[in-house]
Image (cartoon, rainbow, N blue to C red; front, side):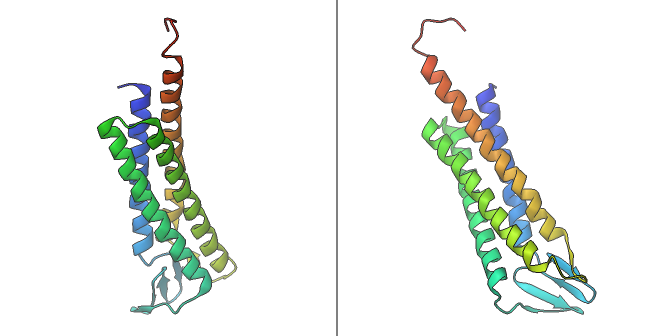
Length: 167
């Protein structure tokens, strides 16, 4: 297995891990904990009774961005699998890299927005769903760099393939 193939495989695995963490973070309601309960993007539980959270602008923006990040992450993972299975061309590698970076950017916007919403409350503590969202961010960005480096290897190999130089 060459360097290009290893980078493509690593990018796909990192994208898969980022997607698992983003989906886990999105569907669970343990983003914040406070003395009587916990809450997430969709539900709030107080003393064992869970209810839907009323619409708040920052929470709606966070939810929209993280759902878009999950969607673009799934697309990038599918494109990475396609590259691995079909020896994709460099255009597909660049596009996969760009979508991984887009997923990371959307996730960064979502996580920053949620952090700003609750950072000044003294009785609120961030919980594991919140931290799994932050943990998905470097995986998504590293996956983008893996696909970008693999694409650069493909481009450099194509560029020097016509020269009669023995490397």
